[in-house]
Amino acid sequence: MLSTVLSILLSIFTPPVDYEISLAGNFGEPRPNHFHGGLDIRTEGVEGKHIYAIGDGYVSRITIGKDGFGNAVYITHPTGLTSVYCHLKSFSPRIKRALRKYQYSHATNEADARLTPLDVPVSQGQFIALSGNTGASTAPHLHLEIHDTRTWNMLDPYQFLNDYIQDTVPPQIHGIMAIPQGGTFNGSPAPRTLNPSPAHTAWGRVGFAIWADDYMQGSYNHYGIHETQLYVDGCQVFSSTVDNIPVSMNRMVNSWGYYDHWLHTRQWYMKSYREPGNTLPFLTADANRGIVDFNEERDYHLEYVLRDYKGNEVRRTFTVHAQPAPYAAPPSQPDILRWNRTNSICRPGVQLIIPYGLVAADTPITPVITRQPDGWSDVCRFSDSSLPLMRDAWLSIAVRPPRQADYDLTKLYIADERGRSTTGKTSYQNGWVTGRIRELGSSYQLAYDDQPPTVAPIALTGDVLKLNVTDAGSGVSEWTATVDGRFVVFDAIEKTSIYACELRESWLRRTGTSHSLHFEVLDNRQNRQTYETTFIY
Image 1: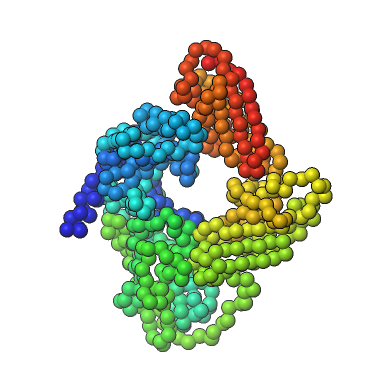
Image 2 (image 1 turned 90 degrees about the vertical axis):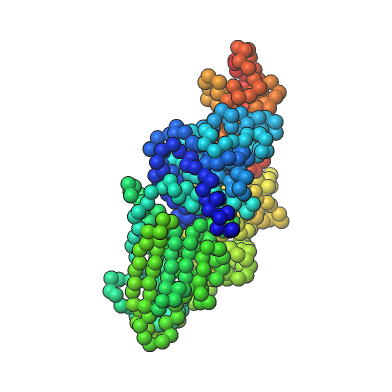
């Protein structure tokens, strides 16, 4: 019965495009700080291709500029799934009207409309948008995601569109790495890649990682691996099947992958063992978490098996001869973040609180405080290279007393080495500024912002009124505008400093008369700028 239900669910969707599907990216590809959460479907290198609903349902959400998706449409289906269509050039007129209706009825510039099942119902195959290149997209394509509506876990869209995708090419293995976990490999306690030799030596606990890509015919792109298995003497010690990823665990990709190696080589070696704090549900391992204990003087026979979603397979075998080796104690680390506790790092003028669950394994850090006599604080850094956390940590920096008494200390914020605000919200209390950070490899210090954003007119072109809004300090937080005293929507145009009002989509009608515009913008330190002008429309 369960298999019947599953087969029905897998067959209910049809493609979102009206031509043969070719992929630029697949589900679960490892990327810094996140997994690729869907399929990137080619749009023949151009924008403006028709995009269709893959199944019956209703438009439950419309967003602009959220999560790197650019223009995006969410369709909730009666099967308990939600499909998401991203990087769109534009919405269908019906969907665009629903977005504007929501914004005007809620008097909000935030382009995040949550709709009811009666607002915009859709049928399978119905036109919903034109493909584009908006958001965090570097070339025209459609990014399609499918989520479990209840849990919002990311599911592999491939399983629902399997019949419409052609793939007979197996994955390829580029390299295998040994990462000793207190043991040695080929006489060393340091990670090292396996050379072409069929035999290697080891002693003690060693983990392995693999660098591999999947491929498809008719494409130069490479893709993530759907299924990985590691066997030792015929017994499976580790497996991964990348088909269901909780959004909250996105940053665990840095733990599953060998992140430090990626930083230097841009090669993702994915570990075939679980770090103790890694709870990704699609990873399974034996009682040793997939780590191989070479504790008998004999040959160990290891085999990797990799498959794509179509079942195309590649295998790689190698032998490791276990022989005792002198133990080399690892160098002492004065500061280590423990994976199973809350960590507190204190230095003069700096306190970092890292709650439990932000690192997947014990992680050494190297806090450095650099004196900055002329600044609002010293500069702090906690790692020699990039070290992203899984969620936000709390950083507090002491304020160096100002030379003048008329400063408003609530205008201070935590900035990175480029002067950018690390988070929109910081607080000042008793001489300390506290905010959130998620990267320990950046440098942080206090910056002062008592200057409001700047607003300059661009033009009224046709039906679109444009302003140029910039802020050199803590960053724009919110804005609002009225025409003749009534609210109008201004969209923040992605990747630019332009804010635009599409007058034809507002309550205003072209009459050739004069109108007054009032525009207010706040930054993250509550500095306010007001701009007023008149225009003919």
